[in-house]
Length: 123
Image 1 (cartoon, helix red, strand yellow):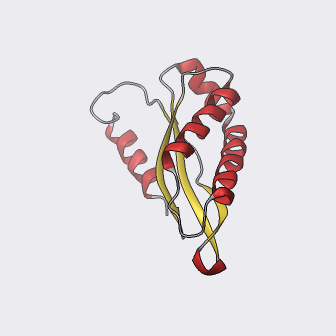
Image 2 (cartoon, rainbow, N blue to C red):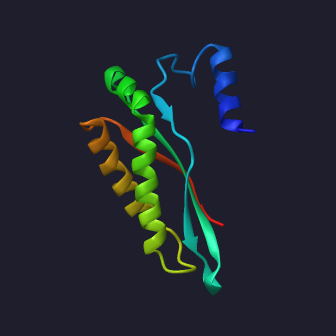
């Protein structure tokens, strides 16, 4: 069960979003996963929760419509990051955020959408 979806539903039913009462600018995207090496040669999974904050309504519509393209681009970035990591090393979240922001801007055709990262972990 996705707790965040339930929280969003509760917020929508309560009649507002976080006290501001303005339009929701957050576009939630599916969790991205990639294979990663763990210490001892075992295969692990790198998991990255992503979303995009888009204040501009027209760009938000484009981001929503481009969600499959964004997910594909994010999959590529996360897989490359997981492949480049040394076994047992923590993920470089700053680099990952920069690369995800670059592919977001490229996929949407212009800047204005901000990538938001949730949990980044390797199990």
